[in-house]
Image (cartoon, rainbow, N blue to C red):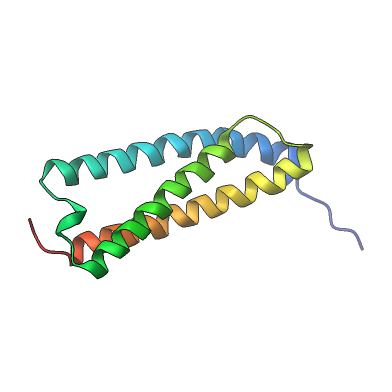
Length: 119
């Protein structure tokens, strides 16, 4: 019994979709991070005011967000690796991991802000 891949999930179609949506998500992720950080910093908030546990949580979350933006950006980069099936596998994985890390990292960093002292 063989399974047939739907036309929307062929490696060629999937890579094209990821390169387009990855570029869009990269811009959105950079913009959302920049706006959030700008609003925090302009209010006078600094990571230095956090207690040590929250400071660690903040920096871990921030590091995950930075890593996620790199992964999402790479996914959207219109460069194929060896061939389309390899690019499909790698771009799919990095897009999924980048999205997961963006959500987890953003939640961790914002939790540290919310649990920290008010400025």
